[in-house]
Length: 121
Image (cartoon, rainbow, N blue to C red; front, side):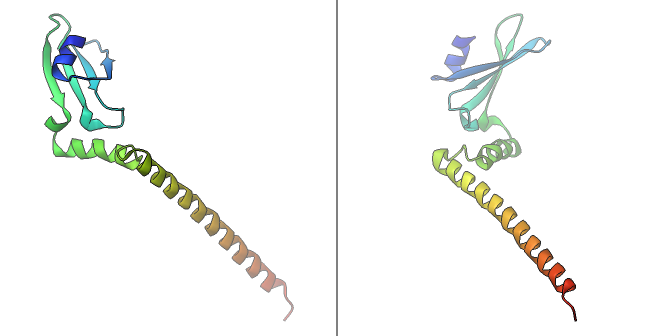
């Protein structure tokens, strides 16, 4: 099977086998770093004959599936490497700071409101 994968995608790095109780077996062949769906393809092999029955690359998928696959890795920053991952981490940190400041402001207002109610008129 590795020769079939090599003939379809030279320089592959990983092959993942989806083992199911069917006549065909699916192999995901990846030549990227794992976070690059455009460098991933699926080879479907017949269990009985050992021949490849279908080869599906990223570009052969419809537009909706391609966008969904890219959206996941773009959301986590994997598409842009370390720079976008650092940006995603910074955005997460900013989100946490916003939550903290929102809670701190509401507690301060609540304390100020309670202090006004206790003052004699």
